[in-house]
Image (cartoon, rainbow, N blue to C red):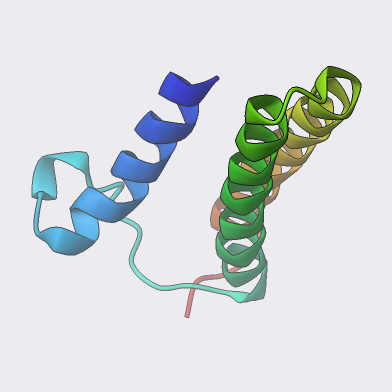
Length: 90
Protein backbone atom coordinates (compact mmCIF):
# COMPACT_ATOMS: atom_id res chain seq x y z
CA UNK A 1 0.00 0.00 0.00
CA UNK A 2 2.82 2.40 0.86
CA UNK A 3 4.50 1.74 -2.47
CA UNK A 4 1.27 2.47 -4.33
CA UNK A 5 0.68 5.72 -2.47
CA UNK A 6 4.30 6.78 -2.98
CA UNK A 7 4.11 5.98 -6.70
CA UNK A 8 0.81 7.87 -7.00
CA UNK A 9 2.33 10.86 -5.21
CA UNK A 10 5.46 10.86 -7.38
CA UNK A 11 3.45 10.53 -10.60
CA UNK A 12 1.45 13.57 -9.49
CA UNK A 13 4.30 15.74 -8.25
CA UNK A 14 7.21 14.98 -10.59
CA UNK A 15 5.52 16.34 -13.75
CA UNK A 16 4.96 19.63 -11.90
CA UNK A 17 8.69 19.71 -11.15
CA UNK A 18 9.60 19.39 -14.82
CA UNK A 19 9.77 15.64 -15.52
CA UNK A 20 7.96 15.69 -18.88
CA UNK A 21 8.18 11.92 -19.45
CA UNK A 22 5.68 11.33 -16.63
CA UNK A 23 3.25 14.02 -17.75
CA UNK A 24 -0.18 12.82 -18.90
CA UNK A 25 -0.39 15.63 -21.47
CA UNK A 26 -3.76 16.95 -20.31
CA UNK A 27 -4.28 20.46 -21.62
CA UNK A 28 -6.70 22.25 -19.31
CA UNK A 29 -8.88 21.37 -16.37
CA UNK A 30 -12.49 21.27 -15.20
CA UNK A 31 -14.39 21.05 -11.93
CA UNK A 32 -14.29 17.24 -11.79
CA UNK A 33 -10.50 17.18 -12.20
CA UNK A 34 -10.13 19.83 -9.48
CA UNK A 35 -12.36 17.70 -7.22
CA UNK A 36 -10.20 14.63 -7.95
CA UNK A 37 -7.02 16.55 -7.09
CA UNK A 38 -8.40 17.79 -3.77
CA UNK A 39 -9.93 14.40 -2.95
CA UNK A 40 -6.62 12.70 -3.83
CA UNK A 41 -4.78 14.92 -1.37
CA UNK A 42 -7.34 13.97 1.29
CA UNK A 43 -6.77 10.27 0.48
CA UNK A 44 -3.00 10.73 1.00
CA UNK A 45 -3.66 12.41 4.35
CA UNK A 46 -6.04 9.62 5.38
CA UNK A 47 -3.35 7.08 4.51
CA UNK A 48 -0.83 8.93 6.70
CA UNK A 49 -3.37 8.92 9.54
CA UNK A 50 -3.79 5.17 9.04
CA UNK A 51 -0.02 4.72 9.37
CA UNK A 52 0.00 6.68 12.63
CA UNK A 53 -2.88 4.52 13.93
CA UNK A 54 -0.96 1.37 12.91
CA UNK A 55 2.14 2.64 14.71
CA UNK A 56 0.09 3.10 17.88
CA UNK A 57 -1.07 -0.53 17.62
CA UNK A 58 -4.79 0.03 17.06
CA UNK A 59 -5.20 -2.66 14.41
CA UNK A 60 -9.02 -2.73 14.07
CA UNK A 61 -9.07 1.02 13.43
CA UNK A 62 -6.09 0.67 11.08
CA UNK A 63 -7.90 -1.96 9.00
CA UNK A 64 -11.02 0.21 8.82
CA UNK A 65 -8.97 3.21 7.71
CA UNK A 66 -7.07 1.24 5.07
CA UNK A 67 -10.35 -0.12 3.71
CA UNK A 68 -11.67 3.45 3.54
CA UNK A 69 -8.48 4.60 1.81
CA UNK A 70 -8.80 1.88 -0.83
CA UNK A 71 -12.42 2.77 -1.61
CA UNK A 72 -11.69 6.51 -1.67
CA UNK A 73 -8.62 6.00 -3.84
CA UNK A 74 -10.74 4.10 -6.37
CA UNK A 75 -13.41 6.83 -6.36
CA UNK A 76 -10.68 9.44 -6.78
CA UNK A 77 -9.13 7.63 -9.75
CA UNK A 78 -12.47 7.08 -11.47
CA UNK A 79 -13.52 10.69 -10.93
CA UNK A 80 -10.24 11.91 -12.44
CA UNK A 81 -10.73 9.72 -15.50
CA UNK A 82 -14.36 10.82 -15.73
CA UNK A 83 -13.26 14.47 -15.64
CA UNK A 84 -10.66 13.94 -18.34
CA UNK A 85 -12.82 12.02 -20.79
CA UNK A 86 -16.41 13.12 -20.13
CA UNK A 87 -16.29 16.87 -19.58
CA UNK A 88 -14.66 19.51 -21.79
CA UNK A 89 -11.33 20.87 -20.58
CA UNK A 90 -10.92 24.62 -20.18
